[in-house]
Length: 160
Image (cartoon, rainbow, N blue to C red):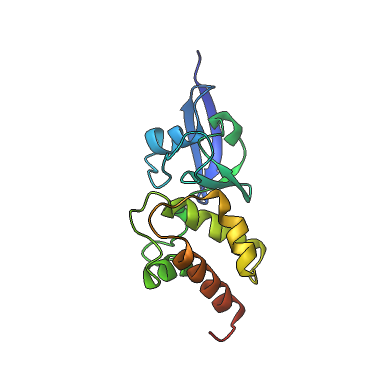
């Protein structure tokens, strides 16, 4: 099978790579590009550990074929921080102890950021619904939900 040449933008940087037509975007991110933040938890789109955004839409990288990235804009967990400056979500996850083993954390952060970009005033139910595709076996979700809600309040300038 001939390799395909793909031109895309990942975390704001123009990126080119070669891939097999059947290779997943998750495999390209991790194996070809060294972006190992996205994790493979299930390989079937059920856990959300590999969540990325594709042109602003939340997708599971394990279910996306790498050639689908052609001409698209991809954001991964590596693109959330700006250099050494953590994103407010990352800061709140640390502050609220909303992470433990770290397998789900990258996908949850990407999903939460995607939510807050669309809605900076979500209800708790909306946050829970939005993050329902991200499974966590360690935290019990409450700390994650509280961290996301606190960032949303900060974004709106609301008092805590």
